[in-house]
Length: 291
Ligand SMILES: C[S@@+](CC[C@H](N)C(=O)[O-])C[C@H]1O[C@@H](n2cnc3c(N)ncnc32)[C@H](O)[C@@H]1O
Image (cartoon, rainbow, N blue to C red; front, side):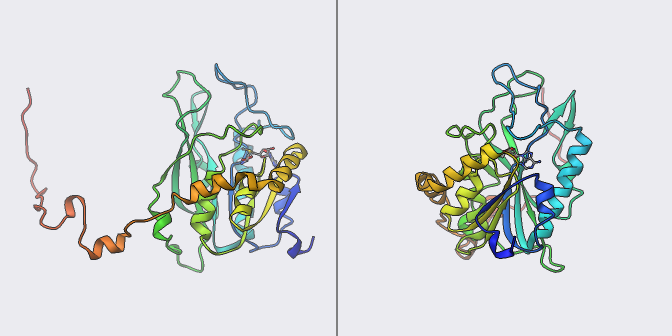
């Protein structure tokens, strides 16, 4: 395939194998949620297990993590310097042992720019081994330009959203594990703002990231193993006007009444550094009695 043919295509196949065929430095950013290697015989009391139509989600943890490292490093290669990738995953437990995404994210080429908590507010798997886990994680990964690790600042209207993203899980979508449209919209709109570019989702499932990209006026590439999900994503992309409202709802949250700079100029500091605040002396311990 010629390089100019990639935009606005879904490529069917195994993610790692397909990524290895793509040229370097072609995408501006990406968003994805990979299969979580949850084991297909697992379920909670109230829900059936997640089963994908084109593949299994059951590898040894070592093989799974090695694969994810290779996938993320291939995405690093095909991303332009200065590009970003939003990687949605979660903390899992297997027979009491915790697997945290940071276990393999520390071994990849990307810089970890931020850990975002996705507060789903509800989750299906209810057992009492731990407090009810209703959050997932989103890692903002960054490919530095030259030696500088800092990168560009977000515009205030995006940066004033917090590092806790609160969206309920998606309910309108028949795919077994979709994320809500607001999630890729927030990531893409915050990074790209008015710039146009090429967005990738290497496990695109029902096409949520591709719909977000299309409605936001971006080009996109998807990779997906299941033909069934690809046909669903194609239909969804064709009818994406039906989802414009949800994209607009998310964009409306990106507003700023006063930037940090304006607050500073007007001396509107908060907390202990407020003008005139009493200086706190912590140089000596102070003892307090209690009964
Ligand atoms: C968590 S889902 C992504 C859902 C997507 N974010 C959405 O909103 O529809 C993971 C997807 O990865 C696909 N998948 C699993 N293993 C794959 C592989 N080796 N190569 C390509 N796709 C794969 C599954 O079929 C599934 O659609």
